[in-house]
Every structure is written in C-alpha cells, then in structure tokens.
Image (cartoon, rainbow, N blue to C red; front, side):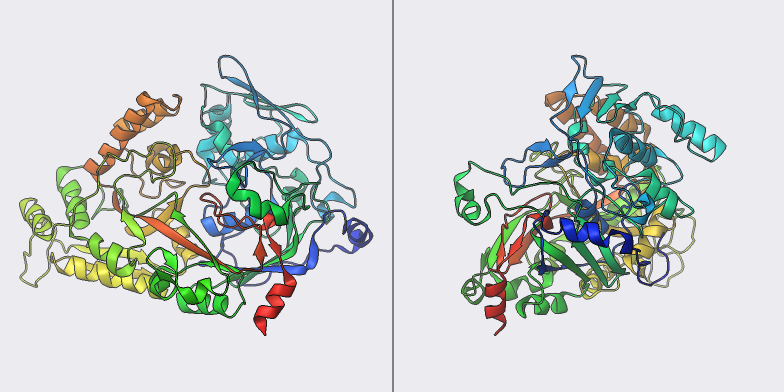
Length: 602
C-alpha cells in the first residue's frame, strides 16, 4: 500500500494535447494562478475507495466526484447535488432511492480511454460502490454500503469464499437502470445515507482505469482519474503533490448565497468559473516551525496554525496586530474531530474484557495528564473530549460526561486493587501473573509528538508503569494499525460530513481491522449500533448513541483526549475564502490576486 519513495509514473498525454489546448479557456482556470498549500503528514495514495487517511482525502476530493456535496457557502450546512441532477427520489417506505445524473460530465483525459472522451454514467457509481465493499480492497468506509444495500452481504460473503469479487454479477441494491439513472435498494431506511453520498469514498471510478493501472490489491493509488476539477500532474511521495485544472471539467460557477455575511465575498467572486487556480502545489511539511515560516514568507497561501505556535500568531482568540495589519484573515472553529488513544483489544497486555483488563485501561486513562495536554501542549486550543462523537456533528450530547478524570491517586488505587503491583522490587508494576507490565505507544517522529511522548512518559512514571514508543512515519504506522500489530496508538478522526454515527463505527465489532483499529467487539455495542443506524435522527437515536458512549466509558477501549480548536490563517491575496468545518481545503473555490501577492513579496 505504501510503495517505494519515487515520483508517480508520468502519464502520456501527448495524444490529448490538441484537446487540452482547445478546452483550456472553457474551464476558466488560469495556469498562472498557483495555489500553494501544505499537508502536515504524508499522504498514502489517491484511490477514493481505498484511502483511509485525512491527508489523502483532501487531495482525492479535488480529483473525484461524489453525487452530492455540501453547499460551500450555506450555514447551517446543506447537502446539494454535485454530479446528481437533483436530490434523491425516495420511496414512501424509504427503501428505494432513485438518483438521476447530469449528462455531459466527463472524466479527465487519460490513455486508459484510448483517445476517446469518456462520459460519466450511472454504471461508474455502481462499479465504485462494488469496489468499496470488495473485501480485497479493504475499504475503510465499507460501512456505507455493506449491510445497507440489498445483496451486499451475500456478494461480500461470496467474494471471501472464492477470493474474488464478481463485478459483473448484478447487485440488487445498486443498479444502473439506464445511462444516467441509479436505483438503490436498501435493507432498511438509511436516514444518514445522503450525508454519506457526499463522501469521496462513494465517488465514481471508471472501470477502464482500474483495469489499466490497478495493482495487486486492485488499488489505483498512483493513477487517480476522476471527473473532478483537478487531475494529478505529479507526485513525489511524502514531499510534493501537484494538481492541475482538468480541461474536461464541466461548467461550474461560484455558488450564490442570500446570507448577509457573504455579500463582500460574492462582490468579488460572483459568477466565476471553477476551478479558478490552474495549479495546486501541495507540500508535505510535518514540522511546525518550517510550516509557519513558509506562510510568513508568502510561500504558502494559508495554513492551519500549528498548535505549539499559537501564541506567536494569536492573542486570545484574535490575530495579533502584526498579522492583522498585513490583511491576514483568521478562520476559527471546533473541528468535527476526536483525538484519542486506542488500546488494541486483542493485545495480551492491554486487551480483553475481564475486570482486571478494564481496570488497567481505565487506570492508564486516569493517570494520563489530560490537563497538561490541553493547557501546556495544545495551549488551550482544545476541549476535553467527553464522548466518541465530537461537537458539530449529529449525535453529540453536550450533557454526557464520559471522560476519565485525571486522578493519579485513583489510578494507583485501581492498579493495586487488581494486582498490578511491583512484584520483583525493580520499581515498576508487573502484571497480576508476575510478568512485566510494559506499554508500547505508536507515535509520529515530529516535534509536537515528542511533547506528547514526554507527557505520556511522565504520566506513566507517576503510577509506576513502563512505556516505550514506536516511532515511524504515519503511513507505516497506519499499515501496522490496520493489521492489528499495534498495542496503543494516539490519533484522531475527522468527519467530512455532519453524521456522527461514523465515529461510533470506529468501535463497531464487524469492522475490526478496517475502520475499527482498536478491534473492540462488544455484542451489546454492536446491537445498539445496528439498531441506531435504522432510525431517523430523534430522541430514540440520541439515547442509543448515549448508551454506546457509556459502554465506551465502561470498557475503555479508548482513552479520550480532546476536541481540537483549529485556527486557519489566510493571506489577503486569496479570494473566496470562507471557514468550512467539514472541508478546510476547498481549493476549487479559491482565486488568487496575483498583483497583491507580487506586491507583498517586495
């Protein structure tokens, strides 16, 4: 999945030069306008059905098209058609959805299409959804369809038995009934499916592209070809990604808004063809200081302020005067994200469901100094997490308090009670059977994570527990996490839509080794999850979510950490910017005032 560190294979576009030139003005993008941005961790690849990290997702959503998207300007957020002609036509019982596509949408030109323009069809979505449930691909977002679509479970079971998914076999739950019409048949009313259809995991993929470039897993990580505003121009792994505006992109204009706060923005942006920037240059800059320095020198057009450098940029929740004087804009809000440390529930030391194992995990969580994380490392730019579902998404209960309170004395007492004592006199606690108790936490090799490592070390030293750290790059750690080879890992998950059930899916037993990295598998939790996903949003569903959060508190497969507050600073030459909770990188909407950028560089 990771592959070797080399540039992506160059595509042979020579046969499309004339077509590209004649279409250059049609898409409105200016190749002189280069948007310069940064990712804070390496990407893993660009296959919409196979990716499972946020950083790759940011890139993929500019290359591929789901049926629906969130209106860029509307607040509260609202789902609107993207490649679909309209919102779904849903039957009275909620079990049949009919979706019409807009005709005349084309994939970016690619040799896989043998010199022909390739139109998007309903069959491309059906094919992509089959890919998502294909066990061989190990799709992180398989829960979108695996038990919702009629016939999906049977197709998955057959693929596991034979070792090969039958893409030619009809799937009753997802059918292309004509060139531009998709019919979805569901096993139960899926009230949150519309939000899921905004995800890039559901984006259309051309079968010819997979046939031409698919690897042993059937992935197209290096050769993404979609119908979105950009195509992948070049890629140096973990260093730089360059996107270029697709000459094949359809007619899309900057959206309208009736909201008063958008008047000034629309005065500059109204009616502009999208995308506007002809190129997006994406650098991977993991360390905080170089990232902020690149922004200050005008080498990056905007950044999320690194947590450890917030005092340098902000005064309270406002920009410092020296930044404001330069016309820099601040976007600020609570991310729809949860930061946590998971325990591998199948690990012989920290895993298991017996009282002694639960006590160990809870004691570790109680001993962890979350107060210092929030105020010392995160410098107040976070709130203590109280439940798996974060704020800003459906299902978050502001009245639920399920976090483990920082309590060193209580943690020691709990460890003593269940036999985690120093049996050999070396100063460190041992397991009840006398074997050494030692934790291993996976951690990134960056400066900010060194601070977290030190905090974990101090916290565990305070209660007499040894801890070591596995230091490696994110893609390698993710690979081990998916294989169940990590004991503990601190990470975060961020929503791309407003549906909170996706966070609970991270603890759903049947998805162990896919989205559920902790491998938590509790029958009661699983049954509640199955029931909740069949209900519309309302009091009954909220109560089920609350009960699931209580089970997470009780069994402690996660040590809940924080809900992050993000601060995005944007140079004044970027036009069209509006803070977006669910998409901090909507590159197709941004324009660049080249004269203002040039003047600032003097």
